[in-house]
Image (cartoon, rainbow, N blue to C red; front, top):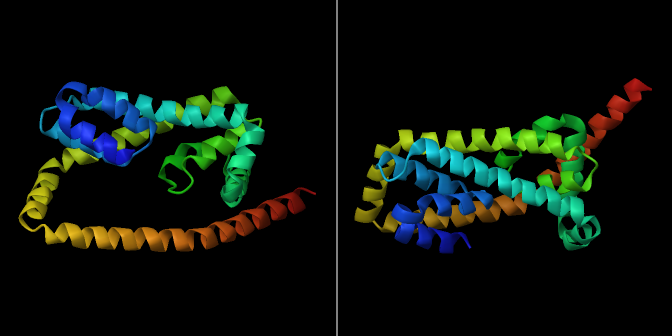
Length: 210
């Protein structure tokens, strides 16, 4: 899906860039925001409008995930049977950190869609979630797009280097795929450890209250 959107971006950024950015942001892909920052640096997009569109897209995406959890609890639990560890961790993180976990979940790779879905399954206030989600989405869009805009010259220089030395692209892909493989291999173990740690913290807190 993201590869298809990248192709659309290359062809229609000048005319449909903001619309593409909105739908791309619903998928919460930082690549779209980085491209928007670069396009703003090159003068093809207005940086403030790009931040507005990306923020609204990110907000919309998490609202969709939240209401998927709220309206389809039984279906989600069956559908995400393989993700039960992540669902359990998301519930525990919400109990321990409250609203803050909603604010930072965009930066928690591997948990970004699970957290809003899992919160939707609970009785958490929909209005409170929406307000925190809105603020989080615009902070996320602002930071990512502004950084890409600020380092636009360096990014263009890097792209020129990769064009002159294409073998660096292959090296980059090999390293990236290796990193992704390592990440997912170790991720399940880390989730189990986090669940145990959060559970212990909650049990200790309950013991002190008693």
